[in-house]
Length: 174
Image 1 (cartoon, rainbow, N blue to C red):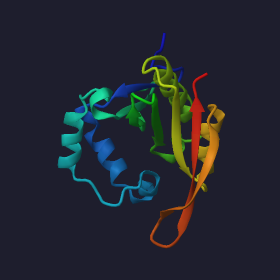
Image 2 (image 1 turned 60 degrees about the vertical axis):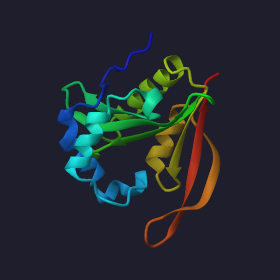
Image 3 (image 1 turned 45 degrees about the vertical axis):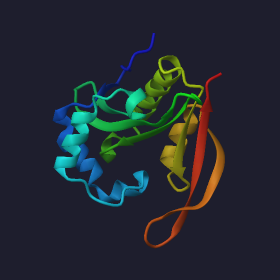
């Protein structure tokens, strides 16, 4: 049985009440490089997104879940994207918003829950992540969950000043 509840956190579908949290995340320029975002999002667009979040993953080809602690506070977001039924694969991205909640094991627990969901419920053969070469915390997180570096995309991202490399990591369901 797969559960989206761990010891310290649980994953849940986005709700209309998440508008402010998602708005803050999507408009935090310090986080834009993680998601390749280049423009701010209006509350109106995020509200529309949340209203359409009821589409199932087979229609939308993506799934975004809130990461909540046991006090029911939303502390982050975790995504399945590029959901490919034919090839049984999808990408995964994760964000813990506030620094005090990082390095507490929340991300590791959320990633494990989502990977289990992808393999046991969605019946995927593989999941992957794209992580900047200098994002050591994310590289460590994914590698601790069984992901392996399978390639380096050179000069992949441009931050307005310099290019940076990005790893692709993969985990195959054996």
